[in-house]
Structures are given as structure tokens and as C-alpha cells.
Image (cartoon, rainbow, N blue to C red):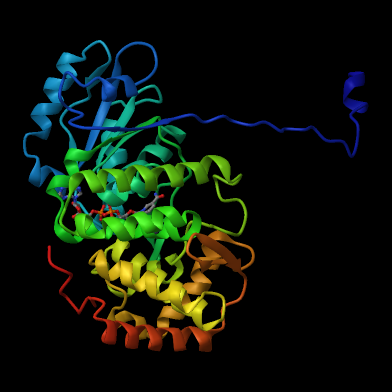
Length: 402
Ligand SMILES: NC(=O)c1ccc[n+]([C@@H]2O[C@H](COP(=O)([O-])OP(=O)(O)OC[C@H]3O[C@@H](n4cnc5c(N)ncnc54)[C@H](O)[C@@H]3O)[C@@H](O)[C@H]2O)c1
Ligand SMILES: [Zn+2]
């Protein structure tokens, strides 16, 4: 018998503390697949030629039918950096990509069939939903395959596609399955935005209103000033909005001290407890961005009724959504199940209920209790304000013009 076996210390511990550093670039460019544009090729960092599985949003492909050819030509021109691992995998665009687990499974199947290892890449090209589903597949395959994202909607370029999260829906809940998995790089190409439907063009502006309300009063003023140009589909105005909104999101993720949301608060999720519930109650008829606009309008109304937000600021919030062509009400607001969204929101983060409200333009604050009766009154007041102020409502089955 060896002496070592009898001398093991009892009640001892090893320290396993370490940090992992992340560093990725969010690029803003124009015509990223022009072979003369090296931004995308350079995104495939590392030694040697990167093998790349491309996952494309069907809605993008419908408007950019030459995308597979352009990708082939681009890869041929940059053959020293990347090689395509077969034809692109196409996922259905929109929330369907996250609703049916078969689509994330298709990403896993392709990763397996094409031998994508941890030194190879998934390149996701699409809206937030397809990027979330493809990102989830990439994050769990081999415990994490590298991902480069090319977001193609306003919302994906200014929020969904630039952060550290992915996920799909399960058990009737948004993002129930998912992972924190920062990308290797993000390449935002503004030309993709030109083919969005009007409704998808507008929907992404709600996340800009959100961060402006929470953090940047000057940006809010700029959105008020630029609203007519944004509504008229001025690409330059939208590119500015996207960059500024993305910068505020990235600054929060990198600087606020909780990128993987270990605490109980998610300070950027203003308007999202009801937004997520509205998406679900409307069976995804409401776009994420539209549901968030309604959620922000609702929580602003609640904050005003609670004496936190001055009435003038509340009016500016509703007026800006009106000017941007975004809804502030929907029939689902009167569904009694809406308030279940508060419990589900708390459960998703864990710990104590923490809801972000505002106490002024550019001034977020957190509360830990929501008075349900006051919230019900806010729903009524918001409906009245929308009816009298002409704020657009999304009626059943008919989204704002697209
Ligand atoms: N991971 C995150 O941190 C995060 C953050 C915010 C939102 N999200 C998620 O993002 C999703 C919403 O994303 P979204 O607003 O980008 O919408 P979306 O992905 O649902 O896409 C909207 C529609 O636009 C189409 N489309 C995409 N690009 C196009 C283009 N260039 N031209 C024409 N059509 C195009 C799609 O096919 C789809 O029909 C939600 O599921 C939301 O939960 C994720
Ligand atoms: Zn959002």
C-alpha cells in the first residue's frame, strides 16, 4: 500500500478560477460580396484556408437569388482565406426558423455531414431569427463551432446579430434553448437593407428607440428629427441609426460587467417582458420589433401612471413610434395571459424580478415589483391614447403595409 493514499487531506479545495477573453469586430460595409471588398475574407481569422458552411435565410435568398453564385465567386477570389463546404443550407426566414427545432437540427446535420470542425466556420446570412437558430446549432456542435454573422435586417444589424446570444423557442417560450456564444466577427452590409419589406425596415427601429430611451437622450432627439427620412426609406439615415444603435449595444455588452447575464437584470430588455409574450400570443404574427415597440409604449405608460415618467416624455415616446410607423397597441394586449409574461421573464433570468423602466428620455431605471392593477390600467390608457392620437394599431392578420 502506497503512503500517498493515506495522506490525502480532508476538507480541502482547489481553486479553478479563470477568465476567457473575447474580442470580435462588428464591421459596417457596403457590398461585402464584391470580390474587391476584403472585409468578409479577413473575418475568417486563423491560419490556413477556412472551411465555411453557409446558412442562408430563405427571405434573403428570395431577393438575392444570385447569392450562392456571388459566394462562390467571392470564395474563388479569396481562395487563400476561405473555401466553401458545399452549397448553402437554406433555413426558412422569420420566427419559423426558431419555432420548429428541425431547423436547428438541419444546421447540426450539415455540420456533421460536411465535417465542420472547431477550426471551420458557420457563416450565417439572415435576419435575427435565422442567425439565432444557426448560431444555436453552431454553439452546441462540437461544444462550439466558430461563427461569422452577416445580419441582413435592421434589427439584426443593430441588435440581434451583433451580440453574444443565440437560441430557439421551446415549451411555448422564446429563446428557451440557447447559449452564450460570441461570434468570431460580424459583417453588416447595408445593401441587404434595401430589399426588406416596409414592415421589416420599420420594425428594427424600435430597438434604436429602446437604447436611446435607456441611455442616450441626444440619440432620441436625432431619431425624432430623422423619423420622416427613416419612414421614407432613406438608406443613409438608416445606416446611421444602425451604427449608433449597434455601438450602444456593443458598449453595453462589453462595458456593463455582465455580458453573459449572470445577474437577474437585463438592462437592455426594456419593453421585452410583454414584447416576448405578445410575439407568442400573436402566434408570431407580430414581429419582434413591432412587439417591442408595443412593449416599450406599455411600460412607458406604466411608468407615467406610477409617477416615474413625466407626461411630456411619455407623449414623446408615443409620438416617435407614430412617426416611425410603428404600432403601440395590438389586440393581444387585452389577453389576460399577457401578465404571465412577467413571471416568464423573471424565470428566464432567474432570481428576483427585475424590469427596466424609464424615468426620463435617456434615463433607464430598474424596478423589482410591477403592480398588476396599474399595468392593466396602463393597457387601457395606452389603447385610449392610441385611438385618440392616431398611433397605428396592428389588427388581426394584417401587419402594417409590407
Ligand atoms: N440573439 C439576440 O441577442 C437577439 C436580440 C434581439 C432579437 N433577437 C431575435 O431576432 C429575431 C427577429 O429578427 P429580425 O427582426 O431580424 O426578423 P426575422 O429574422 O424574423 O426576419 C424578418 C423577415 O425578413 C426576411 N429578411 C431577412 N433579411 C432580408 C433582406 N435583406 N431582404 C428581404 N427580406 C429579408 C426574413 O426572411 C423574414 O421573413 C427574433 O427571433 C428575436 O427574438 C435576438
Ligand atoms: Zn429585442
